[in-house]
Length: 315
Image (tube, rainbow, N blue to C red):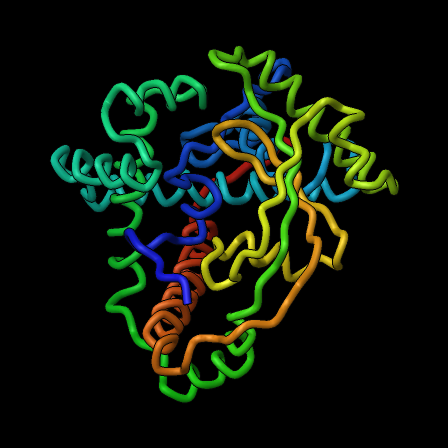
């Protein structure tokens, strides 16, 4: 079963502050205020920037019927983020710069960035600055501490819960999937306008695929490279990717955004494999169940912050 590394991520952080090189996009709209949270504001450009990325990951466009609901979910998460940041400051929770330095080094390792030059180049391609990334890291560390302060000492999943999860979800963990990819890559030194144009191209290709154009015909039609990824073990794949794959029928397609651009992945075939033993899987299952319980309790605690906050939504 795939091991996870790094610090505990709350629901807010998973949505709003992922420490990865996900490409940001700047919304081309006339800016306005869409929400006021106590003394802080959330602007339309801030909301559009976050929502646009998640729409692409969910296979949606601005015209999709589910797009307004997703945008509202992102706005709610931004509101929770503002409340959590304010509460962390109120409690005097502020990471030491040395902790941020250490976490930044871990960030570089996770993204295969051997030195500062590679880091700066990757950040430039992702339309981010080093100061922005350091602030994201600092916010994450602060909110993790707020998490533990609010939720309290973490509990642990029982043996019965771990066994039940294994029986229901992990016995097929050895299964493999055959994936094929279309790659829509940014050119070196791509401008934001070029990135936006390639995102539109990716959305157009996805729409054509969803309307029935054979996957093999899309690469030559749109002039994009195709790559056969072969069979991959689900236990070695990112959990988010596994979630998408499990919902797909053979032949189904879904989009993935990366620092290099976009990929459209097609599920070609599934085949059974040997799952990990219960003894091998149990430690990771226990961590997963414990984290989910903490996230649930933290989410409930955030509701109490909302009840005592002055929130005005103007979306």
